[in-house]
Length: 286
Ligand SMILES: [Zn+2]
Image (tube, rainbow, N blue to C red):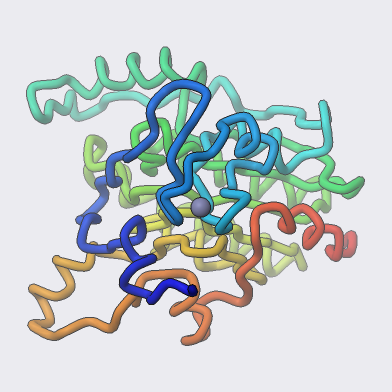
């Protein structure tokens, strides 16, 4: 029997999401087996991995880190990484929840093996050369600090220079509060770079994965010529509770989900992860 929306809504419960924080991974014990957050099936982890981190039973899209997304999307061994040495700084000497930002950065870098929460470079996707940016939600919630904004800007400019279509896979909790206004400035910087790219005739495909929120949504993520979202992805600016408290209004069910946003015209199409690479195949060279 088909499940009702409220029954299937568990993993996508927007009330679990507030501001830039990302909900905790649930039911994801380390080991051979994992429980699907969508249909509750016990899944063999290897099978899920082979299916691009998508549940083979119900199509639930699990979150995947930046390196894995690149591997899933780019043709094997074609990713030529660029701007990998751009690292975040701690100009405000920010301290939050008893932790120095600089120490937090070092820990995230050690965990992911990357200096920032996005990977940028050139790659082939289904034989077509593209400039590629992939955000890494496993690094400080994919938040947009100065270095991330710089890398995104540089890959936009590189796409223009090499006359390549630009593909950015978004996954972000929003602006990086540890960098204050410097983080917010990245919204203007990336948007301006995209405007120049657009003026020059560039094609930008924005792929929104779960979650794409805050300053990322309010800048480059929603500026794609074509905006593609993965099924069920949370896409929004502020968290549901913040909006409800501000507006003092009841919000429609699932109003920050990809499906609702497509219905309202904010998203062009919803494409399952296994099909995203094929979609890019339709890009014509500049
Ligand atoms: Zn499932």
